[in-house]
Length: 120
Image (tube, rainbow, N blue to C red; front, side, top):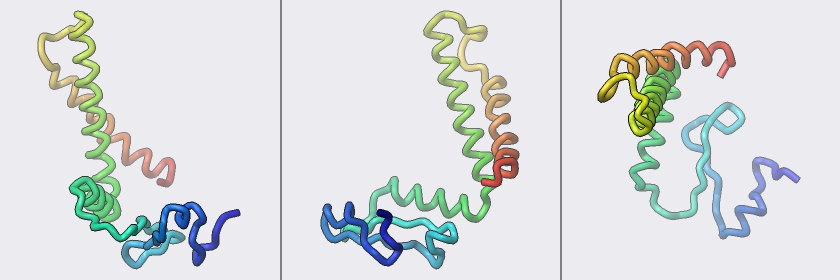
């Protein structure tokens, strides 16, 4: 049984009196985000960075998705190059920055395309 939006979940009640609160004016039905308020202060640095990232994502989704994909793919390529160096199969001594940038550019271009293609 799925609780209605105005009911508290039995799982939440089992862990104490917690409340689900919507942040901002948006509701969950219109794409808003929610958080669990357990009465403790929310001053964790990772939480505020995540909130800031989500705010940027709401304001400029294409740019943020492109830059995020660029960084993830670039770091992934650098990890791949590290494995090549450990195996002794690396074509370049050190980091091949042009290869890393080319691979990152695939994310910079591919993420906005995927945004429109998948309507996400």
